[in-house]
Length: 402
Ligand SMILES: Cc1ncc(COP(=O)(O)O)c(C=O)c1O
Image (tube, rainbow, N blue to C red; front, top):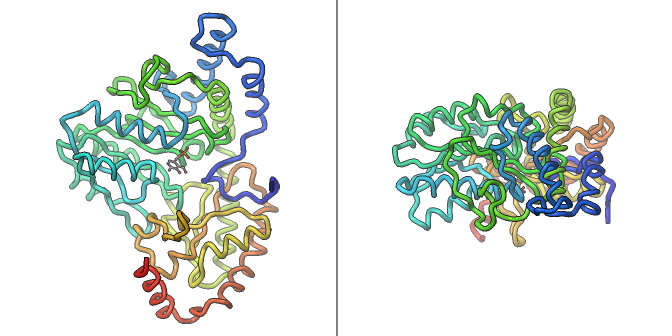
């Protein structure tokens, strides 16, 4: 198994912080009790869970009673959407966007088969929403507006409070998928229009298997997982104590590092981006570069395939990600980049680099050193190097045969 690499795929998942690992080990070995037990061995863990809940609430500017633990971001998104609909059974309309994560998009698609109507708001070439389209879509029948805070592929940040204000005017609940934003953008739920907010531990240096949903006090909530009384009846299932402790500590560390890490990641990201744009012809940044996460860049390299770039990067021990979701052997171009209306020439050759607080100057130097050669090599092999029309035709034929 490979453990050493230049890891620039932090929007996919992150390394668990060593301080977090150290802190949770006793909860896997010695203190394995159930926090709901009557005996001291288990019951003492309720206090540990409370402390972790306070740590997470502090990162969100929320009250600890507003935190509901989940197993991941996907569960948080599912739970929030279902809860909003169950709480308002008379309303049958949902508004979301075309660029959401499948954890939201696929739930909405399923709800369409169950009698709900869904508006999928479009984005422009920069990946931004048109708030007029949102306003025109809202009606008294809209139960929920659910949008992401920041896009996982491009890092584009949506104007959350402006969206929330419009949702409130029509009495709709507002859920935000903040899986990519938490720890990268300062949050304060106290003065916010957000009713529910999803986050995921493994994106902020906690382990996989733990997430949380913020539910504003007073918002009517129906549980997604039904069973025991855990999480004040809002999410059944024995608490994942090591995960909860990890998420609390990870949240505390994110708060501690937020300002400095954000500055550093932005500087490294910008250096990577600007140098690649200067050294490599025919490439461009995908998405709004002014409203964007500090750690993410998505660059389209014309006339070549992103997957080929990734394979060559992998040979140098560099981990990044492409805009295409490779599912069941077929390479579909990213739904996010397609919604932005990118041309086929760029759509297929897009690569996402996502940094974190552990990313070093030397790692960025290494990527800068190898990328121009990789792109040149692939372009030399590409039959469409200087033939945009031929490339477009070939892509269209490929798509037509799917
Ligand atoms: C924006 C967004 N929402 C939801 C999820 C799902 O989170 P999880 O992997 O914790 O289920 C992800 C994961 O990549 C994401 O980027």
